[in-house]
Amino acid sequence: MKTDHLSETEIQQYIFDKTNCNNRIAEHIGVCDNCKAAVTTYQLLFSEIKQLPNPIFKFNLSALVLAQVPQKKPIFSWSDLFSYFMALILILAIVISGYLFRGYLTAILPPVFSSLLYQMATTAITITSFQILGIYKEYQRQTEILNIY
Image (cartoon, rainbow, N blue to C red; front, side, top):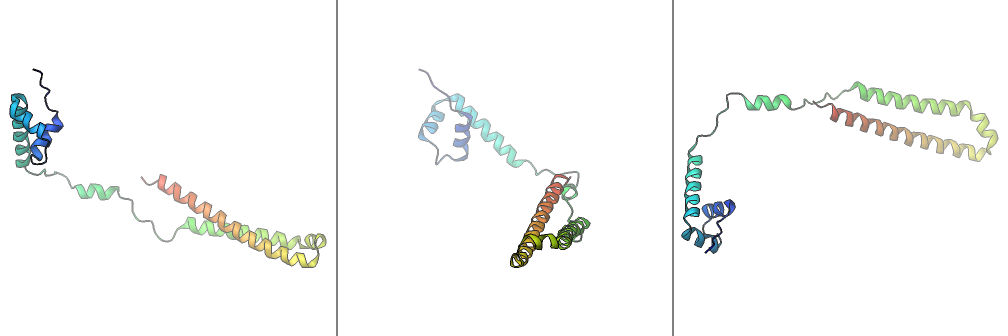
């Protein structure tokens, strides 16, 4: 007669939860001396592990963990000031060049369209400047994430 022995998982399941264990497992342990010995060994092992004292570290674990936590960035940042300054320079450059070349634009377009053109250009410049500023801020955030350690 060939008897297949229980797996380690089945034996541990029997030890931890005998009431919800499969009947086949309980019957096999009742018949098989090898599996009974494995159950006894596991029970002894688990009871000894429960009796072990909790480990005590010889170093300050919280100090080691806190040393690796990144410090909070100060609220004022020169890089923020620089990015706003660059956006302002970009807006001023576009507005000044539009003002300087307004004679050419008004000669090409009728007067009604020139005021509309100025409004559209101002809107487009403002939106583009904020988009460029947003892209630059996202770039800065990603580089800060990479340089966290």
